[in-house]
Length: 104
Image (cartoon, rainbow, N blue to C red; front, top):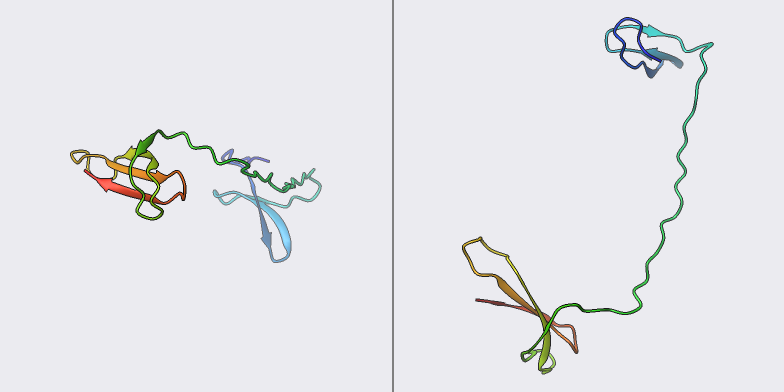
């Protein structure tokens, strides 16, 4: 329903237990005798994802893990400070998954 005065959409409002349609310009009208439609949304449960295999895509490098003594780790770089600063190198042990960083 649209306001006959200004053309805006009429909004429903509960006024003293009685429903009315109103507009910001001041127009209001009773919805009695009008066709109404009620919209309901049903939400179903979300699908759950189970990780079967942890797949690493980062390259490997020979470096000593301080936690377990393993000598191979995955590595990647990321810009963690200002653009004029060098990137930070991150390492993740292939054996115990211990993660650490190295600043240049």
